[in-house]
Length: 266
Ligand code: DGL
Image 1 (spheres, helix red, strand yellow):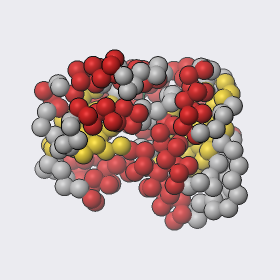
Image 2 (tube, rainbow, N blue to C red):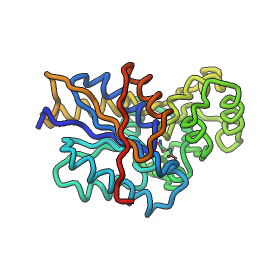
Image 3 (cartoon, rainbow, N blue to C red):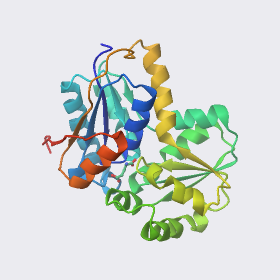
């Protein structure tokens, strides 16, 4: 079992932030990444569709003999985690939300927490629900920021266009007065420095990639599933080939990526 790969999926390049952190914490693991670029952005899709896309990717990763699957997308984590957990018999499924909730609960004592994410994630209310379950006194201010993921996917970050879009969202009165901000979308670590700049580094920015990787490292070692020896190359798949994806993946993993397009059921 230990030598089998870990499957990771997202709608696009956002999950690479998680994949990158996973490969840093677990350097001997082989990763199989799937970016559902044909259906991006997930944040704008209905719950039924997000569940359908996620199930298809789950079956693809299962066929690839993955020993664990990471839903490296907040929208799919909010909507499809329960269903994937139900259909996966003995493959552990991880979402990118619970590790963050866990960390906040154990290590911090914020009174007012902001959450930004896609429409699907914010509409699901999952962060609010899970944070309030742990601490009923905390105040949650959520804001959907639907332009950010497509903007990042198109390579617009660390430049004037992204600065203006980010500023326009974050100056919304609905998200004022927070002491921490959860980046509730796996694309957002790519604009973390711009978000930090907006707040002049005065608030804590919670980026799930590292938190999730640490959490999974601990869990896989408890399950005795951690690969600690040989390493082989990762595999990258998308449902619709784009050069920009291949380029971003190569930058993330500092090596040339051979990106393959694969057609799933829908
Ligand atoms: N990276 C995905 C997330 O974390 C979403 C982007 C999208 O496809 O809308 O929600």
